[in-house]
Image (cartoon, rainbow, N blue to C red; front, side, top):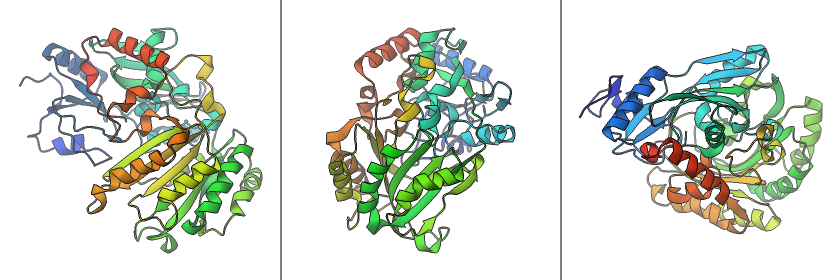
Amino acid sequence: MSVPTVPTLTPADPTYAAAVAPFTTTTTPRPDLVVEARSPADVVAAVRWAGEEGRAVTVQATGHQLLTDLAGSVLISTRHLDDVRVDPVARTAVVGGGAPWKQVIAEAAPHGLAPICGSSSHVGVVGFCLGGGHGPLSRAFGTGADQVRRIRIVTADGVERDVDADREPDLFDALRGGKAGFGVVTEMEIALHPVSRLYGGGIFFPGEASPQLLHAWREWVATLPDEASTSIALLRLPPDPSLPPPLQGAFVAHLRFAYLGTAEEGAALLAPMRAVAGAIADMVDEMPFAAIDAIHSDPTDPMPIWDDSATLSALPAAAVDALLAVAGPGVETPLIMAELRHFGGAIAKAGAGRHDAVAGRDAAFGLYALAPMFPPVAAIAPAAARGVVDAVRPWTMGGLPNFQGPAAGGRMGSLWDDATTAFLTGVREAYDPAGMFRTVGLRG
């Protein structure tokens, strides 16, 4: 087949596997061709070639959250577009299309600034923000999409556009939350915030105490100011020797907490939860923002998983009981994690009062379930993850694009209300009338 005049790889190339390797290894990507873009000009050339050849295009940066095997498509990898430039006066960062959050954090920290990132700094900036983006500081500052000031994107006509609130505002609004299907983002300018430290971390409690902890947590979150964020997860940890001995192979409840005020104020806010049960390990303390990964302690090594999620309108006692019935003490399940995240605060407010496409702004909580796809539990992992979401079905109200698992299928289009869905459809048709980006096989 013909190829564009840019760096490309086919399945026959020895470096192909490494170039397409995702973080979530449940699915093995097999695109017909990989374009290793090393400049925006490479992206332009690749998109123009794909248009001439009538080829479908997908985009990958860090390789998180792969949804399909990408068969029949051309994959444009933006992982080499990872430059980060911080303007400490304007409190902004200009981020390449393939940069992960850890690079932004590293560049911003010397200036006493911080981005609104997710729970893992290994996730790509662009995919996070395009999907809305909920993180440990979002209750205080809003979603990742709310931080976006400008986007440079190559649309299906092969034109690289600078898009902001004044230039092509419909595309700008659609990109902030609409996730995918509009083009290839080569650069994004985001706001930074004067945050250099926080009071945060995680507390591991015995899993047997999870009924008391979850019921206390659902009432406690209503007392928190917007400057405080929290989540709680039921974890079935592996017998990993890298974990502290008390956690190896243990079933635990992991309370996560982040607070922008003083350590004394944070400790007072956290005191009611610390009093619920004796901790196995209490790691909440004063910390530099650059250590924010320690709050959730998300895995950093690729692995095969099956995940599912939902947003919740409320978390009454009955919902907690339903969750415990499928993921709590004494339940035989392959689940690694069943997690609840508290939303509200600035998440519920559109950035700068503008319209955008962020799904789930009015959700009170997020629910996430994750199971490993290793033999012999791989056969039952999907049902276990789905069972968590099904258990709280009476209180579910939708989902978030960045948390849709491999079973999402056609669910992505149902995450937005009818008006936003119609708006996103119209923008996609205006900028990609032939459906070049119809193969939406990636979330990040």
